[in-house]
Figure 1 (cartoon, rainbow, N blue to C red):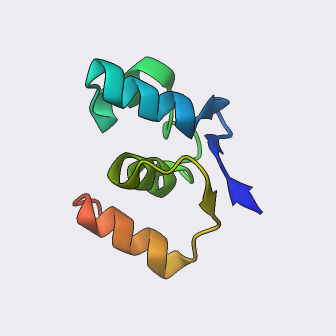
Figure 2: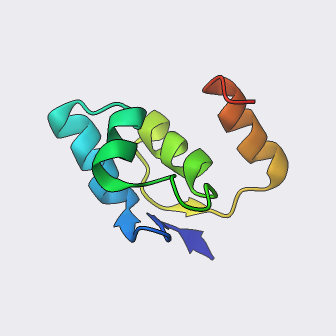
Length: 76
């Protein structure tokens, strides 16, 4: 199974990456603009990973991987 979007707000990681690159939006600005990561919050590590790597499709992360991504963002 692959993860490619914020399910709560139906916004794809491709769209988020495009907004980040083309308009220079930060993670917080993406949240305000699209609502991503403001529902259940499960997509936050995936969105952060998208912004770090440029990848828009991810395998399901285990808890340890998600925690490491959040720690890099200062969100432990």
